[in-house]
Length: 80
Image (cartoon, rainbow, N blue to C red; front, side, top):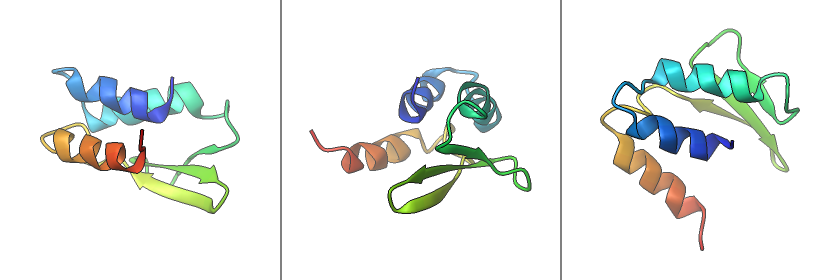
């Protein structure tokens, strides 16, 4: 399951949290994908490497009350 699908799923669970989201990301991708990285100094962050380099992402407040703006933002980056 991809990161965006995991975020979408976690956002709609009543008990979904930033902590459970990052734990699921690590379980699904850490050590299994060379494009995914765990940031050991900041447990609420992860990195994704793509053609332009490594991008760090912060999970703080991504599954809470700001669900709709977060999902709308990502949807705007994925046309079609």
